Image 1 (cartoon, rainbow, N blue to C red):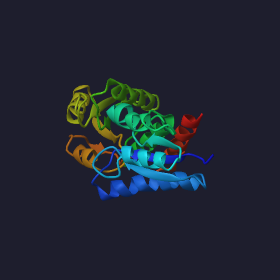
Image 2: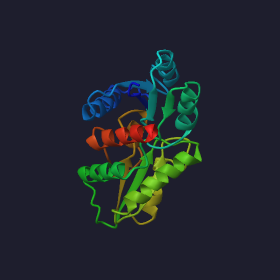
Image 3: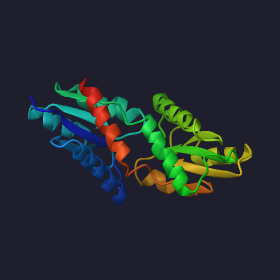
Length: 230
């Protein structure tokens, strides 16, 4: 039997850099595992949809593993992607990329690159995620913040771009009220796009770059694929 196709399923974005980085992530996974067949799918904004991709592979009799290129498990994971594989006998869904300690390492590196000091107790971090109305997604982001806090002297809290509370600007204000001399927004997003663009107006002293590009994320992607096969 053929090795299942890795369907790398991203949210989708109109941002050309964001599109390129997501495409390069799938290519990086293929480079780490020669012979692996990968294809892209999306849950929103851009085609092809994950439903169409999975249905097409299923019609060809090709098994597939859909790996959500998403940092937490919300509606897109539990409804859109779960629904796409439910109708296909030979397709399974992996769990999303986050939470994962390697993503936290990338976050910490982005913070240091932006000029933030992990040893300074007066530098607060607001972990900024896209946001979801699904409490499982919020719990995943909170878990990521807890992991980051282990290697950060100042307080680490969470803020969201939509659907969940508090919004990022409110989280930044709360950190200042809490006594922080410096507030840094850690962009917990894979690539530039709508949510990352909004972070510049959140009132922080610094905003980090998104997580991509980084080889560690391709390693996480392959781990999710392998775990789903087991």
